[in-house]
Length: 235
Image (tube, rainbow, N blue to C red; front, side, top):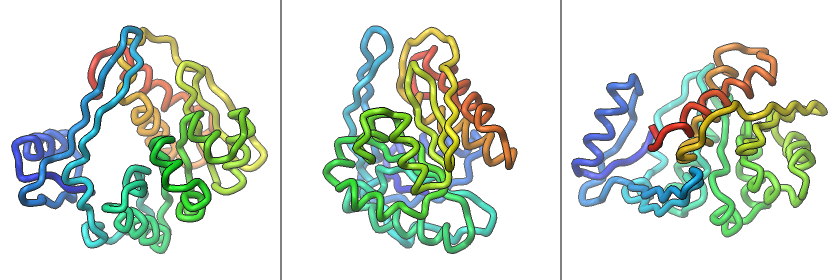
């Protein structure tokens, strides 16, 4: 679900996603540019980004279709962290929970998260089933300097928390349990998209095999991340 501009970039991206089997719910915003991100990659693979969110900022609550019971919503924190699409993001979360769906949430970024307000964000997202922060986001959301303590604190609010730790792998917190898995060995060329790939691999495993062992779910995410970072580009 999202918005694109009435430009070649939007048309091309929509066609690429559809060809990959994605069922799209997109609204074209006349006169707006499709969102664009420039990724600047350093030697060793670390990256920084310049973002122009374009038509994404015009997402509305009525762009969100009804949710069917038993489906899943994955919500990007960026949807909540800007006044434009925030109402749509909160409406999607509320609608999915009301339909009995599970919800995963990526906090997105410490900078805008700090501006939004940690207490406000925790209150707005309390209904999410699975939280997917990185280490810095987990620390920010809890005030804990130790990432394991941060994961446990977040797991007191959410059923499951899976924290990506970059080169240190990832950990899973649920109730009193804590599981950590190492990163998969790989050559790091470009870390663009690694966090999203981790989330995709973990979610596919978790949703596809109810009751999956947390270590296996983490490994599924880490395998996808390792595959992404060994080549340039976020595909």
